[in-house]
Length: 374
Image 1 (spheres, rainbow, N blue to C red):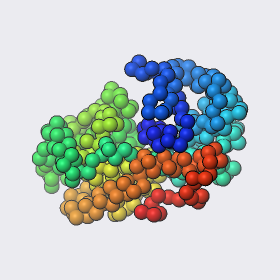
Image 2 (cartoon, rainbow, N blue to C red):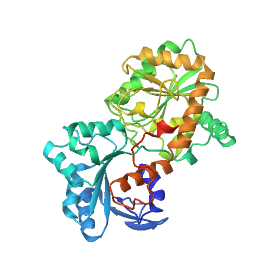
Image 3 (spheres, rainbow, N blue to C red):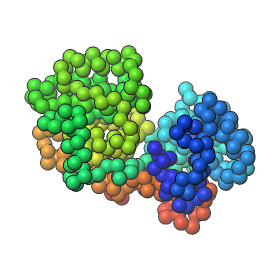
Image 4 (cartoon, rainbow, N blue to C red):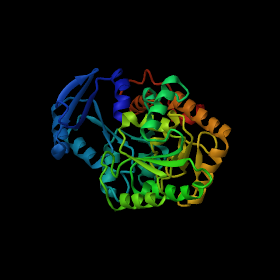
């Protein structure tokens, strides 16, 4: 989604090629809106991209989240400069050896991370990466997130609330993969004390066990079992495609992200703020870099304690003026700093910092957090 969102803006400044895996519905080679797309079979993807790089004369290549493949590509095309983009801690000891990690750092013209949290993870293990690592926060397409107070936003909210039978209900929304480290079971436990106080309250759970996979495993069966005990107060939507997720956020009244793991920086926070829904989330990993407690979200410090989620949801329901401030601040923050055009500018600025494209248009050399100016 980051590539898809930023590519049109990057293509305005660069001759851009995007390499990805093949799909039956897409040609292996095409040009769309000035961007060249080259696709290779998943089974032989790495070696195919390496071969492609030896045949083409690229000035630089940006490799997303695969440091071992990065080394393969760098070896295959020594005349091309390479940037490694990280939206997870892929340079952690359990992911890559110290020797290979050092090779990555040495070979990279630069490293881009999705949050300062991931940047610190990289530089703590590999201090030599300090001077060549930049943070590039992501963003959203606001065209997919109409203001909920607008005519379009109101219409979509009504359509989706009717679709899921929640027209007259208060909807707490979870959106994400149905995995233990995302914490939906904690949220279900938090809901129990609120059911008698709020008879119209329901929990809407959006997501599959693995992105677009709505299959069952031990954990999803446990969620179904817990939901059954709540007797109709939990609704499972299944996987919702990215281009429709904004409509689901519009249908909700409070969004809760009960992550238990150290999130690099979950993009659902950008999406929820864009949709103007109050955000309750955990202070895990990079989340706290874009969501600030009682300013544009409610931050949970002890992610394993369902009582804290209960109290946060209850407070938000009891204080609509407070949640209005959160949602207005969140929407304004996305409008001013976290659209894909902003992400693309940060990416271009990183490439300029690494000396890969002209410095002439570079607006600012110091690295800054977008929150500093908003």
